[in-house]
Amino acid sequence: MSQGTWGPPALTLVAVAVLWELAVDLFRIPEYLLPPPSGIAAAMGADWRYLLLHTWVTTKEVLLGFALAVAVGIPTAMAIVYSKHLERALYPLLVASQSVPKIAIAPLLIFWAGIGTLPKVLVAFLISFFPIIIDTVAGLRSVEPEMLHLARSMGAGEVKIFLKIRFPTALPNLFAGLKVAVTLAVVGAIVGEFIQADQGLGYALLQANAVLNTKLGFAAIIVLAAVGIALFVIVDVIERRLIPWHASRRSDLAAGTL
Amino acid sequence: MPAILGMLSGEKFVEVSDVVRVFPTPEGPVRALDGVSFDVREGEFLSIVGPSGCGKSTLAMLIAGLMRPTSGVLAVAGRTVDRPQTSLGIVFQNPVLLAWRSALDNVLLQVEMRGQDPRRHRERALELLNSVGLEGFERRLPHELSGGMKQRVAICRALIHDPPLLLMDEPFGALDALTRDQMTLDIQSICARGGKTVLFITHSITEAVFLSDRIIVMTPRPGRVDTILDVKLPRPRRLAVRDDLQFAAHAREIRDRFMAHGVLRDIDATPRERVP
Image (cartoon, rainbow over all chains, first blue to last red; front, side):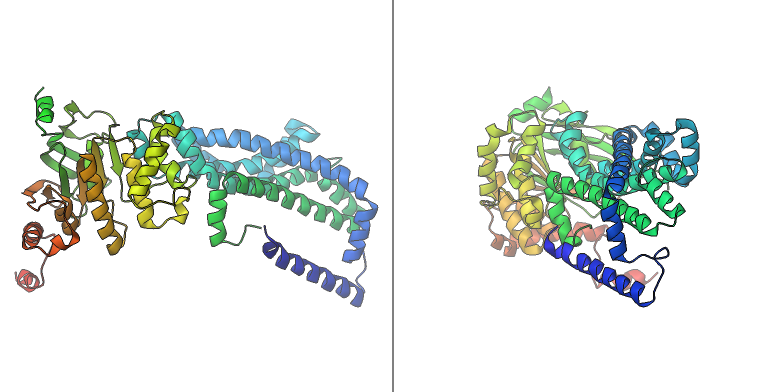
């Protein structure tokens, strides 16, 4: 999170924008095919109210879908870890269900849940809850067996073992899952909006494309990327606050996750 | 109640009678322990040495009540072991510290899990950490400690509740040779102070002879008691005792048992064995 990690990618972005600007100018590429960065920036400035409105709609869908995925995913993971029967009956199906492309189910969800926010929330939920389950299960299982033996020799019950040992041990994995999930939730909301919507960034993108307003389309994509990155960073910051012992160890291995 | 009588006379703190433990595996049942019987007397330091896979660790798990025997009986302090034992301290080869807790808080986990107020045990925890040379490291997180330091924290965690029995399952197995030597000395002084009954599991002949009052030599799988050996070396023992003739004689005795079972094969034995 230091300047060291932000600086180089920012420089790369600036360099790409400059080259892009020059190339569009040099080769006289028509604006409806590829607008220059300056044109996209101008479109963002001119239509910021419009973009903000749709950003809010999409962000709301993403957050609701993600929250639902957390609320369903973590208890499901706990149930799978604590019940051999559930693990056998449910886990293989959950894994197998991942071969079904969620996008293929999206039209059905729209059909069932009608129009409005709910179907987009459901697509965001469906696409993002799986990594939460898988990573939480992995995390809860990552407790060393010796640690559990020790806990039992200390006379501790299952609840205490969960609260003091299992759950904190699972947090690094859990957060890895949350980071993947929050990014996927953005994809889910957009897919939902592509199928049917009258607001949201996915809708704005389709509208702009339909009238060959490529500048506005690009602007929507950039805002969308910004939303995804912002949500990821928020999860990352919470992770660093909550499990600094892990973040400090991790920074030796990989120079940040962004 | 012969067991209680035994305790009073300083004997038979742990009783292992004809214990068999079979593990089911995809290739069929594996007999890890095959009729093991021995006692650990109160206050003595008993080592179990044996090759890998002889069921030494299984024995520790059985005595701790963390695993049930297939047949046979185990008793600690006169009571049959039928559930996880709580009046003991356990040290594994892996220190298993909680990554988010400081050295001090890892030691205090023991009392927290027992539902006691950790603040009441802070003093003693600090004392213990000081006694193993961790003064100034109380606030460090495990990833800031060396392997030897982590294992010292684990030992303090096993002692904070002052248990009468200490189970150590290859506690120095992951440490370098110099650290092992130092830890061996530290364990000796810790155990001398507390008057604890110690069951020490190792595959190091040197460690076993250095630390023990008695040594049980196990056979390769299926594990059986091969020999029980009394170590007649005065205490406290310095590292130099390892150059002593008596020490060498004990070590040889164990080594000979391993050779008899083919666990160790000396160079001159190899060509002869190849002759049909």
